[in-house]
Image 1 (cartoon, rainbow, N blue to C red):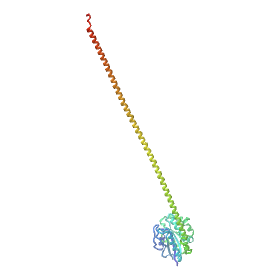
Image 2 (cartoon, one colour):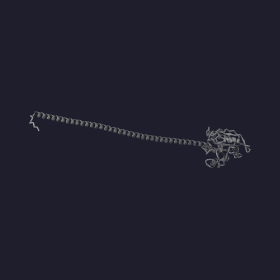
Image 3 (cartoon, helix red, strand yellow):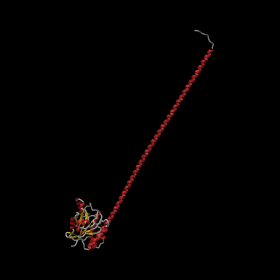
Image 4 (cartoon, helix red, strand yellow):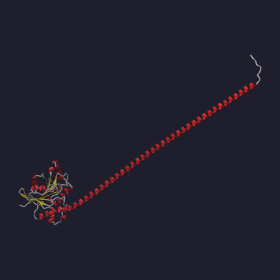
Amino acid sequence: MSETIIAVMGATGTGKSTFINLVSGANFEVGTGLLSCSKEVQSSQPFDVNGRKVVMIDTPGFDDSTRSDTDILRTIATYLADTYRSDRKLSGIIYMHRISDPRMSGISRRNFGMFRKLCGDNTLSSVVLVTNMWSQVSEDVGAARELQLQTDELLFKPVLDKGARMKRNYNTLDSARHILEELVGRGTVTLQIQEEVVMQNMGIEQTAAGVELEAEKRREIEEAKRKQEEELRRVQEELRRQMEEEERRRQKEMEQARIRAEQEAARHRRAQERERARQEEERRKEEMRRWEIQRQIEAEAEQRRQRDEEARRIQEEMRQQREEAEAEERRLREQIDHMEHQDPGPCVIF
């Protein structure tokens, strides 16, 4: 009985190696976070599922932490072409997706886009889309995300409409085997990448996956350019805003300095005016003191003059009185002298 070969694809960190180890007993190295441990395509030892020998193929994601997407595509395409040439055809493909992701990121979309180009539409009935890591979300949140994946035209809906199925993996052996049972016993399929490389003898870059990868590179370059231009605009806008803010600050400081200068000048003028008023008042007081002193001097001089005049008047009066007294004394003496020299008249005795 031929082996049933099932390939497992998906982004790095979606649990591909863990799923294969659980269901097959393999011991593939398991990565943590976004660090990929699947450097090359790996195959498990055959194991039994419902009486059939099953081999699981582990593939690296297109977001490998150490390799380019072109290198990964070449690795996967070469492996699938070699297995096809050796008549070891696939019976099914499992695509793993983390239900714990709030939304399908750009990396997840790129992986899913490459997955579709590798498979082609004719093989989708042999595809099972597996949502993983249900233990990391509540049932309600997980169910809502699951419904969005199933119904969104940009997510899983187009693939489901073309025959793919969607299953949950609860990280138990039972749920893993139930997923494999969806693919075991079915016929083999030829992936689009196998038909292009082996039957049409295309180069990797000419295949749908290669063209998609090149287009994705161009989109990434354009997106990087757009983001760079956007960042440049943001930086320029931030610089412009900072310059405007600096100019406003400078203008404000200049205005404040002008106001302070005007206030200082006004204070200086008021101080000068007060000083002039003080000096004027001092001058006025000094003039008043001088006038008062002059008035006092003049008053004292007038008083001295009046005293001098009064003294002179008194002296004059005294001189006149003295002269009058002297004149009277001379007159009396003259009378006495005259009387003494006159003959005595008859003596009349009463």
